[in-house]
Length: 576
Image (cartoon, rainbow, N blue to C red; front, side):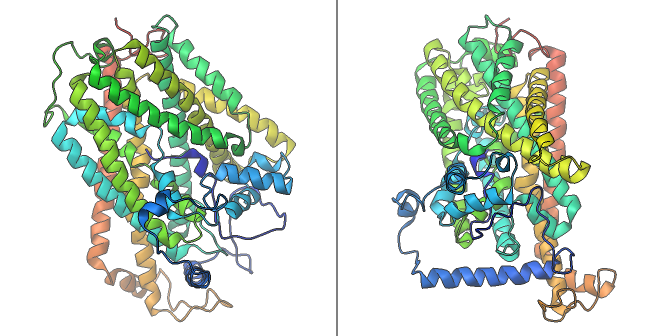
């Protein structure tokens, strides 16, 4: 899953506001009369914004004369090539003397501070952000073990193509609806402009679920790694508690900028783990005892299959590991908001999808070719040589707790601001009561993540479930559904009067209660709309079926005893 947590806090880099007018809580733009902007208003100001960006680019002589290699790896001025939103926020907070209270929440000031330093982010920088990863590569060998070479490669290519298509749709809608006056800041903001509050709430809820399950997965994975390091002499639940307590302590750091350099460091730790894993599996035997403990696979010769003919449930669970690799669409809007020229986002997105397809698929095929049916998820825990296994586990533990702390920090803010504040009227995090509530929320959040990971100590099945319920929607189901809403509304505007900025609601000649508006909306691009409707329904069906498969696999593993027991002392990797 391409999910760089440090980038989630980024917002419109084109905003240049110097006054200290912090606005806490969810952003709800309004017109002069106090009403929410309509669809035509967003389109009008977005068109002006795109024209302004083109004019500024020409005036500044910004011509894409250099090649793509220099865009990706060429040396830029340090301030222009900042890709860490966290580091940028820290720099601006030092300059502006921002108070500790203001740092407690995802504020407009935080957005603007980050944006000020990131307004020149290139598409090469965004490519780097998209391809940074925490969980994705480690799960790909397991995916090939479940489906075989042929279906595995086919799924990687097909899902990669569909992820690229979804990325292009999101990019197109961003270009048409984002402006300096009404900036898009998140996936939920884009959904709100197309379908209203209900869709934004759905996006926020799924995002919150994804974040807390990511933390639970990291607790579980780190617990498994620690249990291997101590040779299963420590109770597995205690191993999980260790990382939960560490997260509760790190989670009290209320500002993300303090994680900046550490987050970038963790990326290289993960790359080092991948390299060591490939070298180890090529020169050592598979971890037979772990494979038997985790999946009930008996020792024997390594077998690799072109097609693994088995029930569809484990195959779908394996395919959902591939979905993890393409799970970055949820924050594509944030990436575009970091760019001075969001029209260049498609380059970063397309190249990153090719990179993920080739590199992740190579890693999966490499490890599967040497370990076959004995592949462990995550892959580095399938190393049999204790010394190398311990090295990769130690590196992964450091990278994992950093990632979990970042996910937890963001997840708590997302849940508090977008759900508790907006839906239940909780106090803002900037007041004294909110500060105490934040500290309590950190403990509750990590406790919930511990309960999820310890109650269901099945790494592959939990990752399949979160991929099916959350990641699949953001990457595959929602984008074609959203483009339907966009095209239908733009088609309906063809019969209206020209937009008047002084009377934004006076251009419509009819309403959605009239058949004439629906007739215009559905007449144009009929086959394209039909394709997206079919794709939406197909993706939704696949997500439901994959969710069912993951839940069924969880139940079966408990019934057959192939997994560890809930809150038990036996590690899922511990030989019986």
